[in-house]
Image (cartoon, rainbow, N blue to C red; front, side):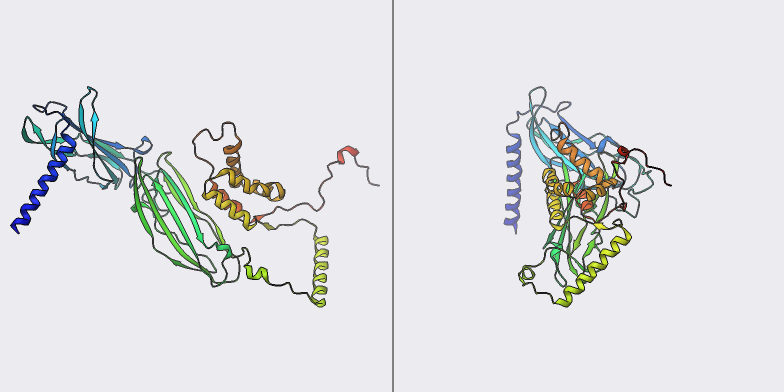
Length: 438
C-alpha cells in the first residue's frame, strides 16, 4: 500500500511539473510580482445587447492574463445565487503577446448561467488561486475578478414568456427543424409502419432547455413514441442544443390521413421577438401504388358496367348544366411535386424549390391564383422570388425564405373560389351601348 501511494504521489508531481514545463518554461522568470502581472476579468455576453429574461442563457467569459510562470492553479467560483449554471467545455490555456511585446499565459473558461427570476443581481468575484514562481520561491496568490452587475428583465408581453405554462419557453439565437420519414408516409398502407424522426436544433442554449416531445395525434393512426435523445455541441460561437424525437406511425383505416403541422413557438434572442418553427404537415397513404398493383392486368368491363357508367356520366353532365360550371372544390399539388418541394426545403435550395414549383404556377393558373389569395403563401412566394431574382440576390447573407413553411402551405388542399357561370364579355365595350329592350 505504501509503495502504491508513493508511486501515485510521484506521478502527480511529474504531471504537474510537465504541465508547468510545457506551458511556462519559455516564459522569462520575473524577480517579483508587479502591478498588472496577474489579471482576471469576467464579461457577461448579453444576447442582442439587452437585459436577459428569466431562464434565458447568459455566457460568462472568464479571462485571465498572467505574466508570471504558474506552477499550480485553482478556480474558486462564487455561489451564483439566483442562477443555475453549467460550464461549457474545458478550460483553455494558451500563450498571448501583450501590447509591450512580452509573452504571457492566457486562461479562458466559459460558464453558462440561467437567471431564476427578474431583478437586479450582482455576480460576486471569481477567484483564481495561483501558485507562481516569484524570484525562485513558490508563492500562492489569489487573483480576484471585479463584481459584475446583471439586471434581469420582466416579461411584459401579453402572450408567452418564461413563466407561462403554454407554450414552452424556448429562447435561442436560431431554431431549425429537420423532418424525415422511412418509408415515405404516402406509400404506407393499412397495417404497415413508417418511422418519423424530427430533429430540432437551437443555437445559443443547452439541450436541457429544449421542449419535450410534441404530441402527434390524429384520427385513424396508431403512434408509438420512441426514445428522445439530447446533446449540447460546443462551438466557437457558443453552444448548440439538439434534440431528436422519434415515432413509429401505423395507419388504422383505409383512407388518406392528413397530419397537421406542429407549431413550436420560440423567442429570438437576437431580434428580441417571438417567432415560430414548424414541423411540416404530411399525409399518411394516398401515394404511389405498389408495383404489384401496377403489374396487374386490366380486366375488361362487362357491358352492364359500361352502360351503368355511361348513364352516371350523362346524369352528372345534366347536373353540371343545371347548376352551372361554378362551385367550390378542393385541389392540391400532386404527390411527386410535394415530395420535390420538401426535398428542396430540407436541402435549403431555393433554386430547386422554384424549379419544382414552376410547372404548377405556369400550368394551373386557377391554383396559382388561389395561392396568391392566401397572405401567408403569397408572402412566402414573394420572399422566394426576391431571394432569386431581386437585384443583388445572393450577395448578402441575410435570412432566406422559409422554404419548410412554404412547402407545408403549398402542400395543403386549397379551396377553389366560385367562378361565374357566364364570364363577362371583354369585347362588349367595343360594341357600343346595348340596345334598349322593347
